[in-house]
Image 1: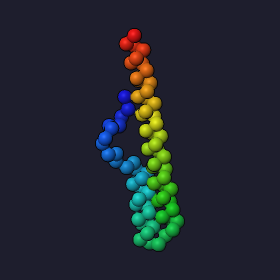
Image 2: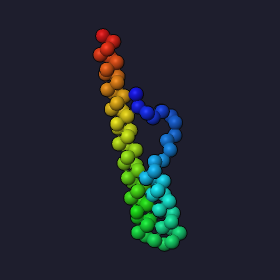
Image 3: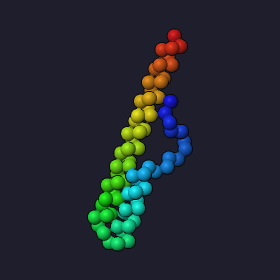
Image 4: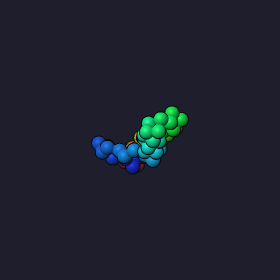
Amino acid sequence: MGSRTKGVPQMPNADEVKGRVKEAAGDLTDDDKLKNEGKTDRAAGKVKDVAENVKDKAEDAVDSVKDKLHRD
């Protein structure tokens, strides 16, 4: 089974948090480069979350097939 629990809000990963901090710092200092780095970090975090969700669903599907094969 996957490691995530359905219906439970997910905490942001480290890249998303780092990105938010960089964006906020960029806003405070008017540093567009830092803001863009923050946006890139947040996007990378979202990609990692999607990949993790796909991995979890694939593992669940494999487990389900294994269970069906072992019942027969």
